[in-house]
Length: 330
Image (cartoon, rainbow, N blue to C red; front, side, top):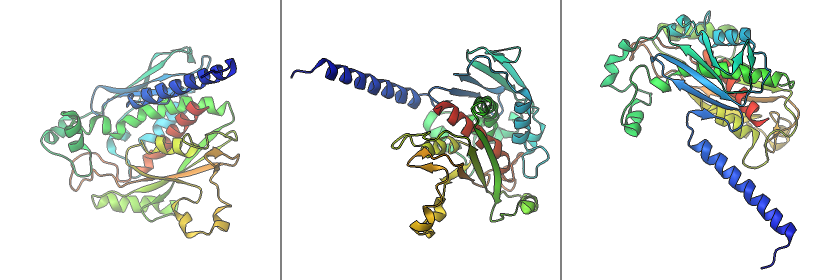
């Protein structure tokens, strides 16, 4: 079969694009501790090990890191001054040590690596878990899949790992803010309570009962360029859901009319896009919600320092994962 030079060129370009995309997806599939394709974040460390940390590849040179932002966001994640946060989170100083990619507070364009030492780790508190599985956790599945597991408070599965996400997310936020893109998340519901003034009361009652309760976090993105996302597989909402659902205890994601939309008629639902149309940003604020389950570790059944409502500390983590997603897409 004869092919013209133009047809051969088009075939070559199409094949190269396909192979490149396939290679990217293959790479992504096999990097289970990394997030992103272009702005890549890799986290490491265990809850009661020596430290946690991360490596960011794709950070542009010349960025003046906002250390105050990082400290304030880590403080939000620790839950200090908040009812419902675990005692360990309140006592970890979360001091960031910069290992590479930063000189005099300015990024070099090389991989940015950082470390957060676990100062309040107590692995001895979890000795009993060597022979036991906690209810509601993945202890047994970890053992079955890997043939070994870190019994020290869950290891990699612990929410302690999210401190590294917050640090990386702060750098992504800085990049996005320079483009006029801003992210804000907030806790909008605890259990069935939707009045923020009553959240503390609800959580205190749950903690006093030795139990836990879930919550809903809402996140809003402004300034996102029209057309961000793709109409088929790379939909904006698909990327956001993938990122947010990777957060510990997150059990659901919706945007626009969300799950309540089934009760609306088309004439009503058409007016609420959630900032996304056909998988792409439509120029209005993007708003989504994510649901966090009640913490499975409760003082009734599992000794330890637990969150009575993990959604309280999840707010800055939602912002961080959203920022990492957008920094990678843009």
